[in-house]
Image 1: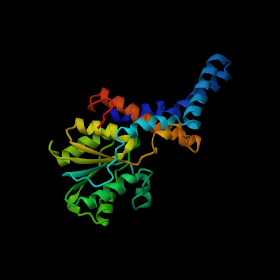
Image 2: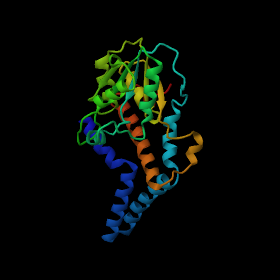
Image 3: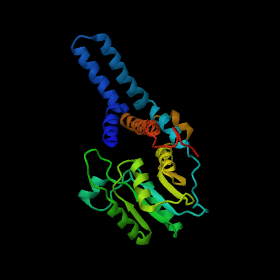
Image 4: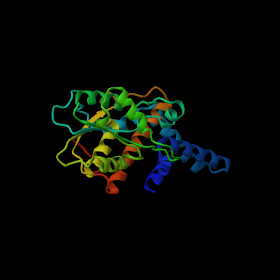
Length: 265
């Protein structure tokens, strides 16, 4: 129920949807001769488009999320690591199912960095966690990801696949049931930088001792807070991405799924 409700609610309140709904409401009110409320809705819709589609409001929202764990360790960790936990979200399940192979999206760095780390840390487990996050169902593609790792030279005995989780909370809990982490174990957590605060909060709350390894940065640094994106659609997409994380941080904290409102190092 939480999963379905979160998907529906966010679809309605994400900034791009709010802009569309506000403009639609404004035009409808104009049609029925209500100019004052129409002006309010039209101003809201155009304001969202200007602030987040033309101006760099989306970058300004993403930046604090990425800066939270911005000290990225590019070298292979020297401390003892029990395993590498790779969060799904980089794979395109529907394309993979219909076209074959392993289709990736713009978060593919999660996979490539995990593979690099797995080769550099040959004694560690490699854990992939992620099923289908679609509201309309679908199957996870864990078997294809297992095959990818094996084809890339990772020993099958090292690979653990969790193929049923639909969100970050389920990533942590379903994986915990498989690997049964000891509090003394250290686990490299690999996910997109903007998603790392929420992920760390959930995994810590679930009892993992995680070492954050953020990848897939969308901003270059603080200067991007004043750098517009290349198109209105790209700006709104960046804003929706950030809004999902900020709303998720609040929802997970209020529901007791995260250790704090804005987890940090």
